[in-house]
Amino acid sequence: MNILDAEQIQERLAPHLAAAGIVPLSMEVVPYDEPPFDTVPVVNVYVSLAGATPQEVHAAMLKAGKVMSKAFGETIDTGYYSPEIGYDDIPAGQAMLEFGGFPFSLAPSRSARPGF
Image (cartoon, rainbow, N blue to C red; front, side, top):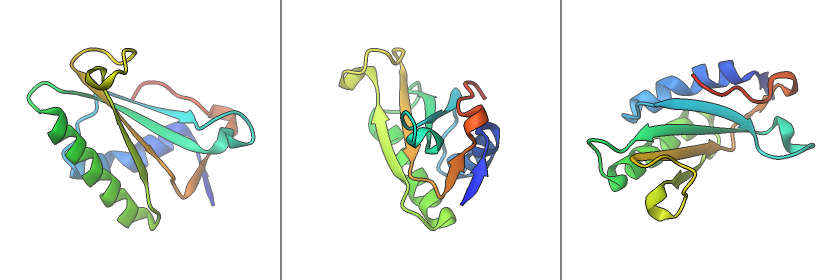
């Protein structure tokens, strides 16, 4: 299994997000959990809901998951979170798209890199 840092993971995902029509406001790579799961990457992609319905953004997320699954040869997990469905820590007018289940590990020395 490849070990990648947060920047490499973001670079690897960017073309797949673009192929699904997702334009990130920001992207962060975080560890799934405490050790021993601290090298399992989860990617949170923040997107604007301006000009798109939540249903359209959700559909784009599912498309990105399928594109990544095909590219990586693994089923990529997806999740959709927004204030409209009870997630108050996400800014109004935005949604967070979560991707996980990647066939690579997060380098433990740089396990979280906010921004993009």
